[in-house]
Length: 310
Ligand SMILES: Cc1cc2nc3c(=O)[nH]c(=O)nc-3n(C[C@H](O)[C@H](O)[C@H](O)COP(=O)(O)OP(=O)(O)OC[C@H]3O[C@@H](n4cnc5c(N)ncnc54)[C@H](O)[C@@H]3O)c2cc1C
Image (cartoon, rainbow, N blue to C red; front, side, top):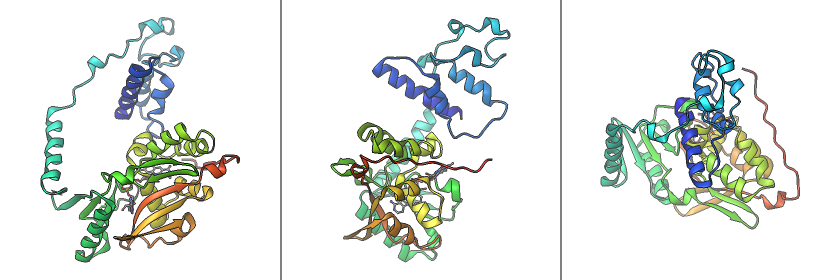
């Protein structure tokens, strides 16, 4: 939670340094949206972060955190955020990152981490080749896993894999393109990036989707998690995905690499019906997703999210 709040503060700092303006407490609060924690530390931590925002309601800040008596509650008494006071990123962690990066580069994009093999594919064709190569050498289907953000491990705890094929660095899977008939984007595009792109380029039809996507998980999962990964979870594990549901309604189509030189296009219905099941080897690579936004420009598209009460 502290990391998310700090990330929210840094994002605001970047925005303020480019556009001017002030820190907004509402935006800072949004950075922990999705966090269910309400333990004793919650209120003071959130209050401290909100206190950096110019729009903070002083009355709203907790008593005893800033002042003992409400009469003393005045904006000018709140300390300002000074980036110069930020803790420094630890040197040993910087070195660790550099070492891991060089281990990946010097061995031709592959790295051994204990008994696991983590391989960074450089193109869709490379990823597909790796998938087939390791599948033929594996004893069980659980050994090989394609990953982008690997956030699904937090949902399914499927930790039995020994070979990870990381497709998050494949440039063509990060392309986002506004076409005359809609938007086409790579399967590794993060949920957060898609929201930003829809907001900027498709104000009408796209805003309904973007609004719903903001309800998915929390900012850090949306930053790391890919749209493609979410759709595969819906297909393979029957995950109750918001994204698959919304895309189904919107008539999305998907491109899948089914052999090194063969790509197929499927509707969302075909894609979801074609899920092999949890224990099946992944047999294809989801590469691109297309949303026909222009045809919805004249229509009103609304989505609702029903969540069980906790
Ligand atoms: C705490 C939490 C809350 C969440 N809340 C919501 C929610 O409210 N609504 C919602 O809809 N979702 C929710 N999710 C799901 C979240 O959106 C997904 O976990 C995320 O989008 C998956 O993306 P990833 O890149 O991390 O996928 P990964 O974990 O890397 O991969 C997911 C699966 O897809 C496979 N895969 C990934 N990319 C490809 C590809 N291109 N081709 C073939 N196979 C591929 C992987 O092998 C794996 O089986 C939540 C997740 C978490 C952890």
